[in-house]
Length: 150
Image (cartoon, rainbow, N blue to C red; front, side, top):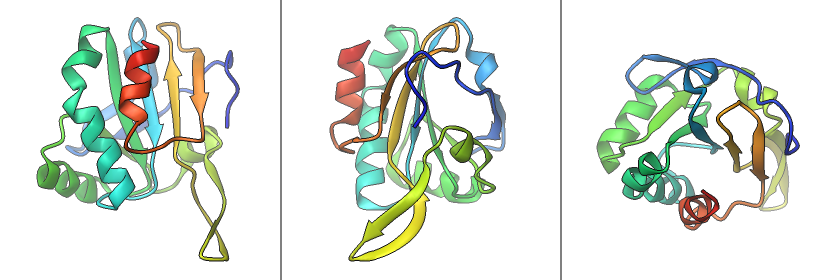
């Protein structure tokens, strides 16, 4: 996980509609950049729906929400449509951003070790500096906790 006070690495990734987003496009706004493992899994769905339900409150506070996983643009589009999501989902199948933000780690599931995305949320300020970093995210509570931080 990247440390608080670190300049957030810039990136360029497509969203669920194929539109390219760069972190630098959001200078002057707060950015909630959250990493999750997979579309349509229980925890990831709760997290994305939590952010979508509170999206108007985030925009009122001058913040944008960007979710990142290694799922494809097509998978993100289906996830968005199935759950009526209002947030931007970024596709990183080559894990360039996932690795730049140090969230690709060994995980133990049912006693078996494998590599995967550790659910992590970063709050990035208007200047592109990480002001909060959390890799102990509870999916269902993440959006509410970040909203409280703002």
